[in-house]
Image (cartoon, rainbow, N blue to C red; front, side, top):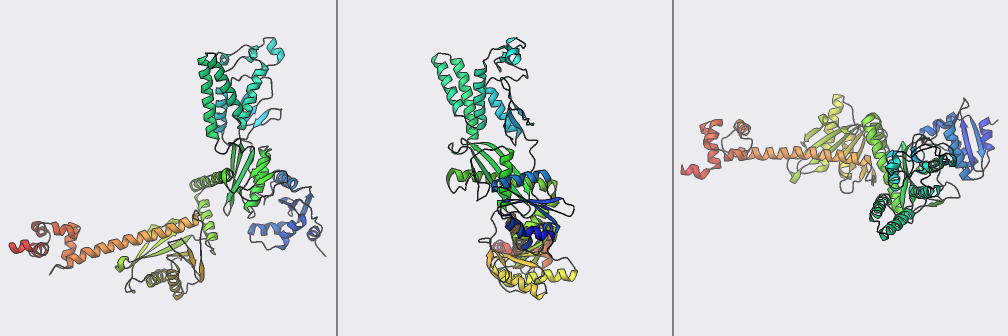
Length: 601
């Protein structure tokens, strides 16, 4: 006999709607939307889920409730409202906007314009929310410079003004207000200013610019040059503000732009509101993934939430890929030109926000930062476990001389320099990179095994298939094949090679995984080259001094300790050398470097 849950699944409608999952305590743990309720909900119980959180969610579902709606748009809005109301455990929840600033044009006679964080449903006009108080203050300062508005909270009703209840204040004498409290400014004139302010807030500067230009010409024609200059200053301020805010084609008007980038655990979504070629609103937020949601799912949720929050009525949106958010909104996926550039700007904002979040996490919560990077590397490099301990090998044998190798060690994505090791190649004759790689990998892990030291989760060899095969053979000889992951990184195109896989992996050039892998390779190369140069230099110095007849190693060591190099020994006088090694040996050394002079002597 089917269970209650099975019966619910069998009887679900094929209509659009919203479904709610309840646990044993009859608490909502997940809310979702669907074009086809039966198909979507059934998929949770018939599919094999890769994501662990989804498997846990399905295990906890005891009861299902659904609500059928007319359209997908209704489903989106209802889903968003239910998530905000119940805050289910497994749903993505966008942050609330209670603390964001708004610009208010107060519903009153002679309206005031001011910044507020409280939206009161009293018929006043609210513009926002803005994500930066600084943006609102700059806009308010501009408005105050252009228009004379009252700042007092008096009730300027017809009766109060006619009865002379109020007197003009200091703002009037400073020419910041035209004195509507004493009837010195008409309501019609004041409301004309409010109409222009409303346009400026929305990003429409044309009417205000035209009006001020006309006023300036009138004053100039009437020889009122002082007043004309004041209007010109206002035009300059308004033009300067418009230039700063206009960044795209002015024909792009009343459009919302959305984009998202994400990693394993979070999405970072950006919203831009465009009016007359100006960005008049911008908002970016971090969305924590709960069930490995796709970018499409997160962006759809973000779009619905933000359009509701900002009360957006824009008939068109620009997005980087196709989304389903309703029938009455035009969805544009730009390919070229200004429209494409504005979507790229939105994506850039999301990326910068992500970078800022990472920097903050790195400072405030370094453990979380390390966990995130390790999880990303595990995923990108297709590893079985997080590479907390990585070792990278590089060979150096410039012109076939003094072959050496280097091994660098990284722990939690950072260099552990005290564990770096140099190797002189012992068993290989001549420049043979493959054989040298096999030797150092074998020697390194034979020693770690013998000393009972911990082994790395990942080995990186600098080079392509040949060097990788050599490293794999060394691990096989030690019985470590399959126990430690090993990859090769080729310099030319930064290909990542895997054992027994002829096709390389190409990582995103901007990915942190590639950056850390390159850092390891470059660090191994630097460490190896430094050792190689020192060895060659030492070898060159010693070989030159060793060519001096009847001069032993102890004498050479004494000379180098004093003079530091063979060149300085050569330049030293007979008396200087005699002082260090005695008369007999000084004579041999000086004769070697200055044979003619000694013969003449």
